[in-house]
Amino acid sequence: MSDKPIPPRPGAGAMSGRLAEILRVDHAGELGAVHIYRGQLAVLRAGKGRERISGQLAEMEKDEIDHLQRFDKLLNEHKVRPTAMAPLWRVAGFALGAGTALLGEKAAHACTEAVEDVIERHYASQIAELENREPELAAELAKFRDEEIAHRDHALEEGAREAPGYPLLAAVIRAGCRTAIKISEKL
Image 1 (tube, rainbow, N blue to C red):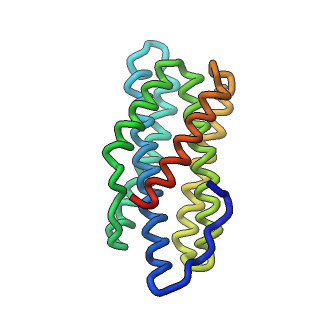
Image 2 (image 1 turned 180 degrees about the vertical axis):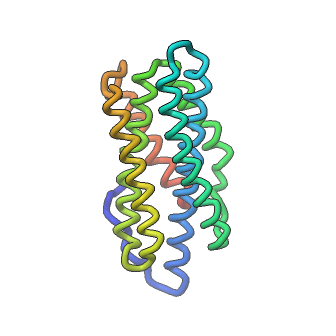
């Protein structure tokens, strides 16, 4: 996936088609993020002495829920269907969250860092693409991107890169995110 904005497509309805892709993929991403945090919390809330990380994850989950609710409204306003992959993304997100949490707190943070790194770049590309055509949406995406950056930075501060097997773990998660983005735009 390129970090460069997609140039405008020619033809009638091209912008509305591209806007539908943007809304669909962003909705899917926020849906996946909510379920990643739910998976992490399902594992980590059960452990003694994990109140701090559980509180942090719950706060980040709240941000993702807010983003998801906004995209729910935008899908309805623009009459865009959500991705057909939503059921799979729910399960995959929860499994990724729970799986990384089972590897430990640092692995859970590595998951957050890897996901948010891809999402920050994805949002930046969309913002650049939309800032002249859909400035209000671009501004909303910029706010969401800033919150995702804060999640990524927090994960780094908490030792994401100290997770066992970090380079491989992060690379696999990033590749999965980029693949999910491409699939969710179209399906």
